[in-house]
Image (cartoon, rainbow, N blue to C red; front, side):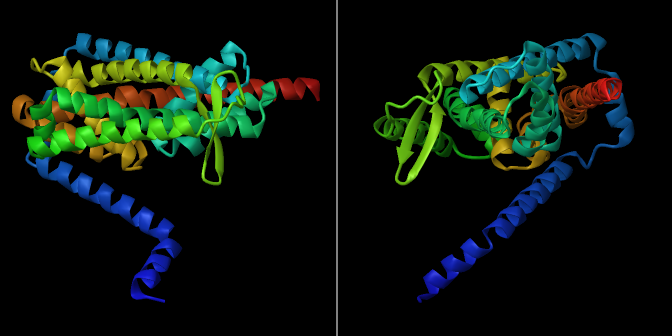
Length: 330
């Protein structure tokens, strides 16, 4: 066996450990980069920046967060169409909001959000396999839609993207075009590999080498892409409304898309550290370190922490009601 083959076999043997080590290294590097950008800020400056945020901006950010979570219910609706199941509207709203809130905060949304969905959908007769399909759809929908959206946004605002990523214009243009071409090639390959079989009205069966899998059809894919775009607009507005200054919203949303896509692709829970690093790098010069850090902290509190607390309270109430009914019938 050649040295290259031995190296390849060792890498495959320890691929999981290497993947975890890479994620940890990215996380440490991102946190260190964030710390290097904000270490000059003291607590009094941060406190002053926090109390300087007008109440109406906070109210607007909360409303934008509500809009984003309404769009996340669109993910849940699409997931039920993908899995070919029907659930009551009340259960869909409860599962969609709670699973999204838990997944956004903890990360590993396919597992954490999937556990919440299973607990809430099980009483309605939804099979574990269908819950797994729904969780996979919701988790992959954002990750698959963000790269092309970020690429289009970066090509529209090349200079801002280059500044945010610390890359030259040519690199930004090259990467953006490569991402879009890659997606077009993938769509072309899948178009030649689809079969006539439709597992559900909104899916098609595909085969690639010895793998067979189902994917959403063009109607569901286009609808989910629109839902993702509206979700990103609302989510970016949460942070945008908390940042002082007059940054153009289209430019800000482009940087937000890049930060969100990088955070998702890093596989770090919530993109913590990576997301902040890109936002700080892009706007600290025009906004100021303390106001920008205050806006990011408020964003995390409004968009991540508050929904997590409300979701936990809702799940607790649901369990108490279920326990009470069980005691009455026993």
